[in-house]
Length: 425
Image (cartoon, rainbow, N blue to C red):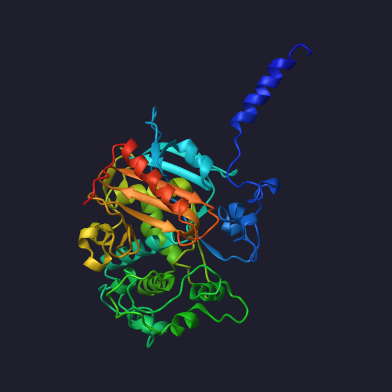
């Protein structure tokens, strides 16, 4: 063996050990650098890593910018963060184990405005803008709350058609804003993620597919009922689509302008975000918001601070109330929900507020969630926020519950590791 060969081999071995394979990286098209797809392929396995972190680069996808702040709010790193561990199915795991086991493209944990952990996977970087899917619903809710506080919406008990005139005379038009916020219109909208449901019809119409009609045509076609309005939570993305039309009409501006003025700039966003826009010019309120991982964390921290922005000079929550407190509590506090919408009643685990998922803990704990593993968890009393972006193979837990169970186990582990509250109510 030549002089110097052994150290070289050792260095190569160490580098190989440090470069661990990521889950299903071959199926996700690592060999081609995780490429961005086109209008017909961006949702597929081979293109979802690239496309779901740069949807504005997909040909044929319409987007509209949400402008960042002139100065980003501070998000410093903890010098010596506490290790994070969790238990799942009787075994103990670390945060690194989680990343080796599940398809997370980004994961960040923040406590009291400081980064405990931040990881990017599958070649993603900190300037990637990750697709929210249904986390966008919670963003839409925050815009409704702001419009209400400004008097642009007079009452949450107004019917949607008072503002969204194009829905006048339709069942969704007659549904109140509060009923839409709780997804309790009582109208039957199928959402199975099988490409054959009402959600697929609405998505094709929004994308301008030939013969699909306009999104309003799909919304007006929903007339059958499963329940009287206001009585029962049944998940339906159509209801958030209506809310987006309500807030844009009430304010006289598009949702991208409203998100910039009411949320993104006051919050101190570091990067521009963007909304996906339907063929009719309406932002896709039910699933089309895209933002960087750190800005998702800033949004979670804003909510953990009960809607108050960080004072850039002190790094602490200041006097600027970005999200109205009373609305935020109505949206996220299980105690403020009617019994049918509380945790373990609305669903076997979560409750449902105003487009937020409510956890069954004594301490107010809530989440923004999207299909394929998009999550922002928030516990205000402990100041803990966890954000995860993912490319899970299946859309929902009805198709494969394991990733959802392990994500929940990780969140519980984050709370336990960092001094959060896991007590049952």
